[in-house]
Amino acid sequence: MFLAIPVIILFVVVSWFSFSEIRKQNSLAVENAVEIYQTELEHRLSAITHFIQWTVVHDPILDSFSPDKHMGDFRLASNDLRLRVSDMQYSTGTEYQYFFYWDEKDIFFNASEFGSDYETYKKIKEKIKTDVNNYTWVPWVFRGNEYLYYTITYKHRTFACLVSMEDILSPLSSLNLGENGAISVYTPSGVLFYKTGDGPSKLSKYYYNRQFFPAEESGLPFSLSIDSRVLGEYGRLFILQVIVFLAALMLSFIMGGYILVTYKKVILPIKIFSKSLSGIDSLSDSEGLVLTDSKIQELNQINEQFKNLIHEITRLRIDIYEAELDKNKFMIHFLQQQIKPHFYLNCLTTIDSMVSLGDMDAAKQMLMFTSKYFRYLFQVDNNFVPLANELGHIRDYLSIQNMRLSRATAFEADIPRDCNNLDIPPLLLITFVENSVKHASPPEDESLTISLFCRKLEENNESKLEIVITDNGQGFSQEVLEKINRKESIEENGNHIGITNCIKRMELLYGSSFSLHTDNTAPHGARVTLVIPTKQ
Image (cartoon, rainbow, N blue to C red; front, top):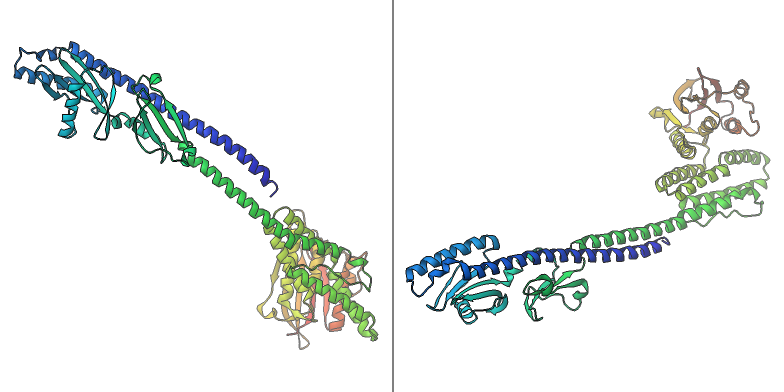
């Protein structure tokens, strides 16, 4: 969000530069178009002027208009003049209309096709008869329409050309001037003569650019003033640029708010919880354990379970029944070995790293697996749980390890349907799976694979459950195999303490009704075979 401030400043600078450049380019495009138009129109008017002058002075066709000729000669001469004008219109355009007047016989006719009404025709006739010598193109307004006309008289013969301003300016109609754009025409003396529209209003004039093209520079009989939209053809691109920036800016603020909420709701509670949990070993018996007042449900559950666990330990320490105290101390000790603080810290540190790196999907997955793992761990209040629940706990544990260690550990389970609801001690099978994950080293070209197989057995008229766990690691050492099969303690430098605890737990729960056998498989791998009484 702080980075958005210099981005806004940069955008304002770039937008102002873009606006100035677009305005310059649009003005240049209008200027180039008008220059081409003026050059072409100046050549056309010059050609018409030359044609009228040469015809009225040198063309033998007009010699037929003489007092010693008769009406038939006049008709033939007028037809020839129309043919000559038609050829001229082929190069200059039919919008230029020609008229001929002979004052000696008061003969007036149009030398080209005339598309207006008869009243207009009579007014044009009166105008040419009364204004016979102009020698230049002059403006004329009649019945709300603006025209340019040119006349020349020689030996009582007047030849004239008339064209409307609308036709004169039609080549400029292709210019994109905008909704309020307009073209204004001024006489050489500066009087407004013709205008294509109302032009920009008081407010919109700031969005329009006015360009003036004087008559003395173009060689035309009029000056032009053009009001065009500042952005012209590039206006949509500029607006699109602004919209894209605003969308990006809004997205950056949304992302900033999302990150801020994520930090307050997820990262900060995890950091507080991790920091508090790291000091659990330094707590005295009288100190209370306060992890966090987080709004994350799983962390609150962990907090409550830890408080309950510490309270239970304190209560058991003052219990007067020594036998019950020893048994429960062992069970709590076993749980503490399974629920090691450093495993919490590793999980939470991994989630913190994922969130810091922006990998929110992976962080969500890790948080989901961890919360399921913890929820199962702290909700185990009974001595027995269904086999299906223990298998789900194993899968959650392997999912966490795969994400933490960035390696794939395959897990294969072959469980008959009638075995899923059979009860086993909680956190029993996970001990052997953890042992494989920590100590098994598969061959270089293979990944670690853990397999679990179950089936029902009948021994001495008693229903039992056989569970076989195998991996493709290097296997147990011979010394460890012998100790496990004799149900002796194999704890060495803190290793294999979980297996030793499992043996003691099963002795408490089953007495001598269970069996535990370990061996190594060929060509490599370890196998644990556990047979326990079934409990529905």
